[in-house]
Image 1 (spheres, rainbow, N blue to C red):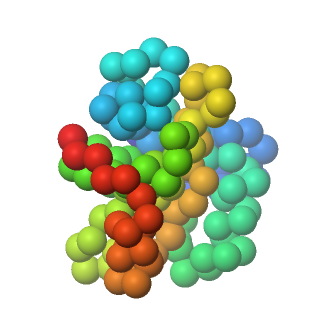
Image 2: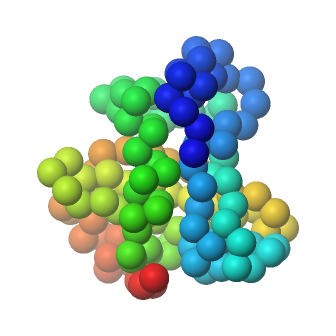
Length: 133
């Protein structure tokens, strides 16, 4: 969605939410967003970014730019709850991005982005509801 230079500059001193990716309409509809059928920006908050950097230091700044591609290529998502969806990409290194809609359905936030592993993926598949595009 945004180019890497913009994100890299934001990441140096994040103060506001950053529109890291475009969420396809079909995923936004699953999350019961206010305007069903429209795509939404996935926002990355400074707080979530700081949490991710602390818990997942192996995720490079440039890796965050994968989120947009992951969401747009997704054919399957896992719903953890009525307002939370997880997208997993299994290709070489496996990645997980979690999105959460606000209660009002007006905004979507990235709540986690990290590398993942087979055990974590299996747990998500067991404990979440699968939805296909």
